[in-house]
Image (cartoon, rainbow, N blue to C red; front, side, top):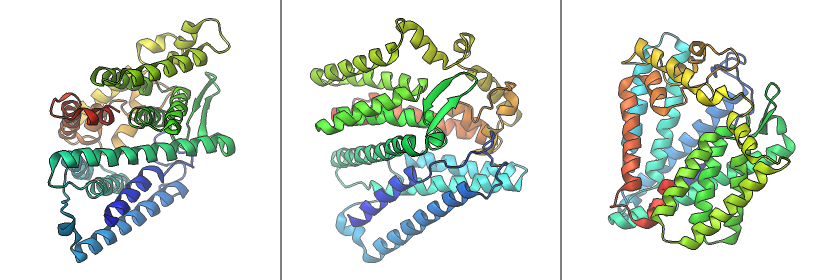
Length: 381
C-alpha cells in the first residue's frame, strides 16, 4: 500500500511539476533559447528524479515480495497498452526524421510518456474482484484528478497575483484577455478546470468542494477556451441523462446560469453580442466559419500526412512544423488541433489508428451498459 501511495504521488508530480516559465519561439523547438535552457533542464531533471524514485520503489517492492501479500497485480491495465503501442511507434517512426536534435527530442518526450504509463499501471493496481477494482480505482483516480486540477488552478491564481505576465495571456492586436499563459496554457487550463468542476460538484458531498467547483467554473470561463466549454456542456448533458439525482443537477444548472448570465452581461446590455465576441475571441465574424483558422490547419495537416503517410514527420517535431504550411502570418499553429490528425502527422496512419481506438474504447466505457452507474460521472468528466 505504501508503494502505491508513492506511485500516485509521483504521478501527480509528473502532471503538475513542469509549468512554463520560459517563452519559447513559435515552433516550440526552443530555437530561440537553444535545446538546452532553463525550461528543458528543469523538465529533464524533474523527470529523471521521478524515474529514479519509481525504479527504486519498484525494486524495493519486488525485493520484499509485497505484491503477493497484497493480492494485487500490475500490468498494462486500463487500456494503457494502446498508449504504450502509440509511443513505441513514435520512437520507431522518429528514426526516419533527418535531424539528430529532432530524434533526441522525440526519444526524450516519448520516454516521459513511458514513465507516465508505468506510473498509471503501478498507481492503480487491480485486485481479484473486478467490480471492487473498478470502484476503488475510479475513486482513487478521481481523487488524484481533483488534486492535479487544484494544484494547477491554485498555481495560476497565485501567478495572477505575483507573476501576471506568465499567468495571463493578452493580445494587443485583438484586445483579448485570457486566464492562463506560459505558466499553463489557457486551453489546457480550461479543460482541466471543466473536469475539476464536474468532479468536485458531482463526486463530492462537501460544501467546500462544491464552492471550489464554482471557482473552477469561473476559471474555465476566464480561459475563453471554446473547446473546454463545449466539452463541459456535453459532459453535463450526458451526466444529466444518466444520473437520477435531479436536485443536484438542478442546483448545478442554477449556479451555471447565474454565473454565465452575470459574467457575459456585465457592462453590456446585449448578451448575444458578448457571446459572439467570446466565440470570435477578438477576431472578426469570418473566423467563426473557419473555426478561428482551424480548417486551414486541418488542410495543412492533410497535406503533411499525404507527404509521409506511413511514418509521419516525427512526434512533437512534425505537428510543430504545420505553422509553416498554414499560410497565416498572424498565427503559427503549434499542432493540428485534432488528436487523430496530429497523431498521423507525427507518427503516420498506424499511430492515428491507435489514437482513434482509444476514443472508441472511451466511448464504449462511457455509454456501455456494463459500466456501473456510479462510475460513469468520472468517466464523462
